[in-house]
Structure formats: structure tokens, C-alpha cells
Length: 294
Ligand SMILES: C[S@@+](CC[C@H](N)C(=O)[O-])C[C@H]1O[C@@H](n2cnc3c(N)ncnc32)[C@H](O)[C@@H]1O
Image (cartoon, rainbow, N blue to C red; front, side):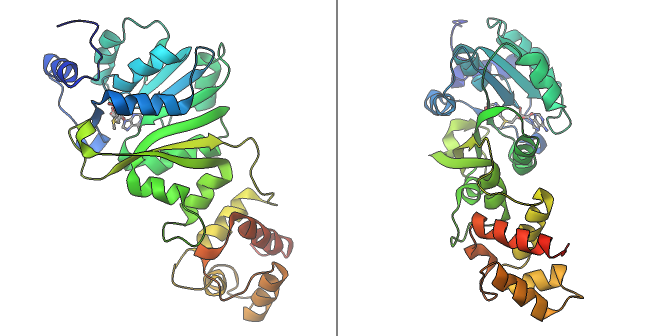
């Protein structure tokens, strides 16, 4: 076999897997990419160059890592499956700008990792074909920890991508849309067919790009209270905001006080959580917070 053939070609992927006797673990969300076109779209969406860094979560056998190594100045990949570490070492050997760490990304100190691995580069992107069983915790960790990121380009389950990018009033709009949009500007890059993976997943996939904001789009008195108000407002989607907030915050204060505060925030108590914009949630949480509601 020609050693220069890309890791992601179906032939080379199958050869690497067979030679190492690797078996896929469904529980780790192992669906490897075997399509040059999709890999190209993912890498292009991140806008990498040799001055920039890329953090990959879950490199698998290195299909995407190889493309990142060709485009970025420094690449760091975190892989949970110990069995993949020697394979990655072997296949990525031609690239001297790649570091592979064994670990669970949810437990890794990412600020420390950034200090160690990205000291020499400017902006950093997260680029990954994420394990679908932990997509939301991984993305929320990346966003909440306020890492110095330019953007996050990830392949995820299509429904989750649609929820992240949804606007008020749509059926997909919910607390995940608001959390993601508080920290970033999401944009769907493309929908991806099952055929680009081995093994093929049972769900549809999409690539999404989150342009990380330097500042949130709204000013809130208390971030965690803001997110609590959002969560509470969507607790039961069919209920009005007044009814949802009543159950969560106004057990003692009473309905009248709640309606007074909603009016102060300029909100009709009969509206449902899915119709409120992020600005309206900010106004609402600030009014409640200043009134001493917790
Ligand atoms: C969908 S596969 C993507 C593999 C490869 N990047 C590709 O596109 O072919 C997800 C990868 O994430 C790894 N993984 C799963 N959970 C992880 C975690 N908590 N931390 C780090 N890696 C994880 C899996 O072992 C697997 O290699």
C-alpha cells in the first residue's frame, strides 16, 4: 500500500483497523469518517492556517487529525480509548505538529492543556467529529469554561445541531439554543449522510460552526440565575411562562407578585417560553434578581 494514501480513504481505514485488530465500541460513539469531501468541509469551516491551533476531541484513528495537521500550526487531540493511542502514534508519525493525549475530555483541565500546547500559536479552534453520547456536555464545557477559542466546528447529531441554531418561535428552540447562543453564534455548515462513516450511525448528522463570542450578546446580573430562569421557563413546554415560573420561584410569593414582575419586564404572562428572545430572558432574569427572587 502507498504510505502516502490518506488515513481517511476507505481502503486505508480498513487496512489500519484490520492490522491492529481494532473493534469499534458503540458505547464510545465510535463512527469514523471515510469521506474526503466532508473532512474538507469541516476543516475549511474552521478557517485554519499555520498561525493557528486546533484541538480535536476523539481523534479515532486520525482521519480528521491528519487534515488538521496539514492546515494548522499545532494540533492537540484528546482520545479516551487507550487502544487507539498506539495506532494514532503510528499513523500520525509523519506530522511533527501533533500531540495526542489519552484521557476523557470531560475530566481534562483544558486551560492547562491550552497553556502547554498552544503557547506558540494565535487563535485556537475546536474541530471534531464528536461522540454523540456526550455532545452537549462537551460543548457546554468548552463554552462555559471560556477558553480562548475562535470557533468550534463539530459534527454532531442533526437534531441537536438544529436545536442549537434554532430561533425563538421554532419547535427546536429551547434552553440549549439559548445556552449555545449566549456564548456563540451558531451556523449550520452542512447535513451529512450516514454513508460517510464506518460503522454507519443510526441518526442523521450535521456539521455546525459556533463562532465564539468575545462578550455575551446580553448583560445579566447573575449568569447562573439567568440560566436557571431559562431552564424553569421551559420546564413544561406547553405551559405559559407565568405557570412555569410560579412552580419554580413563586411558591410563597404568590401569583400577583409574579405578574407584577413580568409586567415590569415587559412580558405578557400568557406567553410560552419558546417565544422569548435571549434579550427578553435577560430582562426577565434581571428583574427577578433585583426583586430578590432566587
Ligand atoms: C465519532 S468518533 C470520531 C473519530 C474520528 N475523529 C473520525 O472522525 O473518524 C468519536 C471519538 O471520540 C472518542 N471519545 C468518546 N468519548 C470521549 C471522551 N469523553 N473524551 C475523549 N474522546 C472520546 C471515541 O473513542 C472516538 O474515537
